[in-house]
Image 1 (spheres, one colour):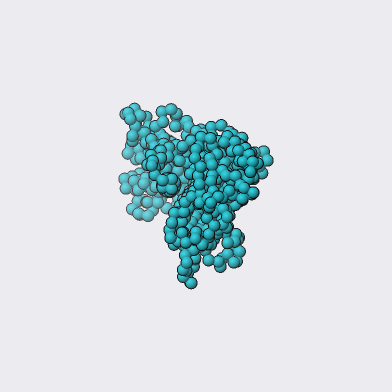
Image 2 (cartoon, rainbow, N blue to C red; image 1 turned 120 degrees about the horizontal axis):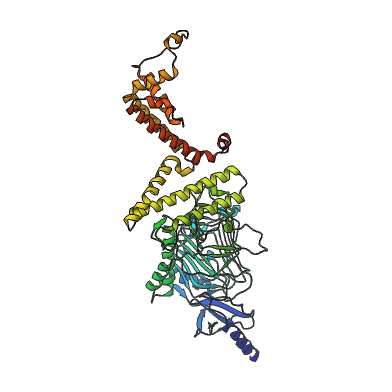
Length: 628
């Protein structure tokens, strides 16, 4: 008895010095040594402990008492011990909120959670009640089996379908957690202590509504932990918020996300503050439920639009200095990836196919010298040509994220553009931003044509954002000087975009408007100056009558033939447009005719310059042909 009390006192002294787990420490702390006889849990969002007796939980009179780890926390928490699985299932079928229970001696499985009566020919086994566990401690929650998705027996096995919310709030899983072969029709929330000596595995499940997982290890736990999410399908936003250590392994593999996958750190202060203000006085269950739902809804809408003007609140984040270690995503299909405002150590994104966008605003990726996996964004891919990487305007580094050859078909820019920030120069920042991408492509890619295409692509993107800047200031500038100074840059930008797509894949635009100009002048010449065009062509190219008699197939045709006259005007118009020289003979034309010819010649000269500057340089054979 004396030795037991001594062990209790020593452990309590060690634990009392631990830092607050729920908060973010301002300075690193060294994990304290905790004996193997210590049960560490999180209850009411705070760390608690109990000392085992002869290797078993200290249960007295059907209860177990947990004491606070931190000296600043007062008061113990008593949990009721529960050993009857059948009674627990009955409580769940009655829709009870199961709060402050210790299930450490029961081995549970999600296959236990079913209605008492099932339809024989149903495709899935149904549980039709809401599940709510709060402040509970579990032993081992195991799947019936953990099988590979592609195994034949898995394809034939019925899934367990949960028709209402499944909520494990502030729960602890001392011997691991396994969830397999389930369908969650409504919200699925697990928050609490999921990471420890035993792994947590979620496999072969479908999530039709919001999934929110907050996983942490025991307080200051320094040993290896793991969380695996495999072969799952998510049809609504997923928020995976993790606190781990450098020995942990967090893995998401062979999953499909049709909406947002988020690491849960891109929380704008206005949302954070509004949530805490609105949740004052509410129960913790309501607070976490409302917050997760509101945040998921924000993420669902966030990437449906881009923001510019004076709206800069979307990408301002609540401070986060926590680091997530050893996060792996492999063989993933996802629409939106939100890893903004995260600090990632040895993060491996391998074969991640993104159909929409990835937000890396204020994301930091670091790697240790012994890391040998994929780094940055080098192994992600974009199956579509409208993919986007959102990154900071000022602090973005292509080298740090190791961008891949997908650069030749996607966009890279901030999600939010503040055109009225007086503390910086947007034009310079925009120029530097895209110069970094172009310099990066020159250094890292060996295919010259691909590098040329990437440069043209991001020159255009730079021009488009510059055009939006000038347009916004012209329309909404605070002074007449501001509007006037942006008028001509706006007109110039609109002209380049309309004629040559600002230099990127603008060949068809260029061809269409060139052909349109030639046809417009052709019609003008035919209607107003047909005789003058015919006279000019005859004088320039046809021989005199006395010399043409020897050519039986040649004749000098006069006017009055519609097709032939229109063809002559078309020939003349094309000749004027494409010839950069201005023949001296044009000055002999009558004044009205000469004015039209001069206007077309100037237009053609502009077109030639646009072609040489914005289009010809994109093709190696044209550069070689014309020597540029």
